Image 1 (cartoon, rainbow, N blue to C red):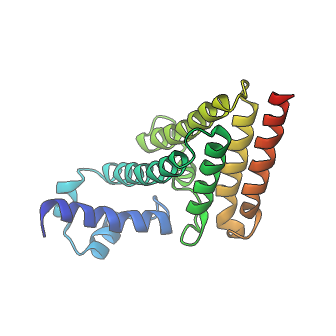
Image 2 (image 1 turned 60 degrees about the vertical axis):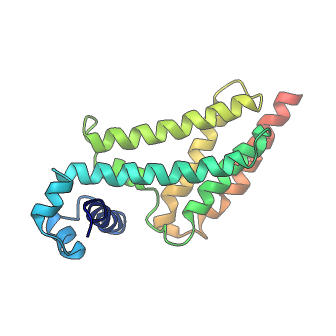
Length: 191
């Protein structure tokens, strides 16, 4: 197997385990056993376990942003449409196979040490989502951060509720709540 594909294979196996089992509950021994590689091979590609966890979150960050950016781009020229597209993209990420909720909120729960690189990366992801929402709400004509914060609350609430209630529980209300909030704020702007 080529070096890059071995690295990717290890990352794929570890990513699946980290998401399904929880980052802290998955040890190096479990990863090397499932990946069918030696510890030396794992450490050649990822010098520390934290490097592997960070690579997992960076890969998920890329996947999420690619999905969100594609959805938003389809609504170019319509700030309201872009806000709704971001919500739709989030809902698509919640559906089957996403029963453990948000990778980044899970990482925050497991790594509470504020200076830990995993914690910092998860915080940065959430700040980037908020910044994107803020830009879109401003482009839609909403000058205060109220709508941004309300959307963050309903998005994170939906993401957090999936592991407990599944997608058909409170998370199923994400679209309705977000649409109501967006329309309410946009109506206030045009009044």
